Image (cartoon, rainbow, N blue to C red; front, side, top):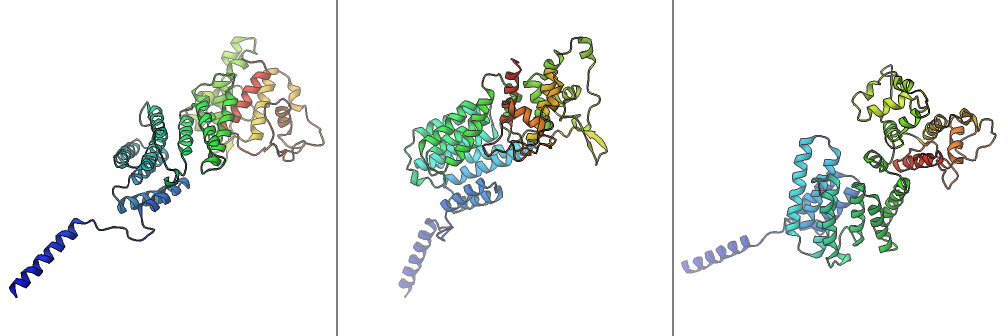
Length: 403
């Protein structure tokens, strides 16, 4: 009997030791697996649901600590958080966290597909947060390494096609303000497949960047112009900066006043309270000095004071008014201000002949400085984007023979 008990005890010990040697699966439900959570996390990132994405990547990591893409996703999450925060301490912590996740993902990546995800994540993170001076070279190196991978596209859980690398390299070039290279990469996406996950995004980006390239053709644009060129909407302060820095409006206006002493005495009547610490303070004060119509200070009911409202978005109708006033001041032709008064019918369904903007819209469109839509509308209330603002200024300079 004692012998039997001894044998049973040994069997129990062996079974216990054996079970300890095996890793018990943490996630057993068919849909509770790292690949699924990674895919859901990446889709949440597309929808800007950062917290949801983070929880999905963390769950993927919990299910399998050696699942490389989970760390790629968490690195991208940190990059998104950094872009939304201004606090230097927070940015430093999240940058370190992003770099740690990228490093771990790189070590864990074994398959060509995992390496693809990791290299694209590297491009995305470095492009978003620019952690080093040579961040663009790091992105380019990652893109080059992708070219050497033999990837089975069907196994790319989220990216679904190798052209995703071209798309994100295009985004990196755009963030670096290298517009021609960005346009070429977006074109590569469109040329890779007739239809694909990234085609629609690449097509939209290509059209946007192509407009920027056209706007900058034949002119030298400085850093201020390049930064504003990529904006989806231009603010009043942005436009003031473009007019002064890129169009050299102060010099052009001054050149039309023969007495230099008179120009030297000119200055803005006051400094609006909301411009005291603004980076474009001097540019705005210069615009105010020349009393450009459409960029005057506005009375604010809350403060009972005249403010410049630097963050207000410029609409297309307002842009037409502003450029019309610039045209009048440069030509000295006051008749421009009333050239289209009294007309009965407008060529634009959204701008009536009695509209406050009508004369300016007609002056801009008949001179080719601004354009209407193919639909026939002018989109008078639509925001002006950076490329559009630059393009309008370039054409205005050409019409005035200003170089």
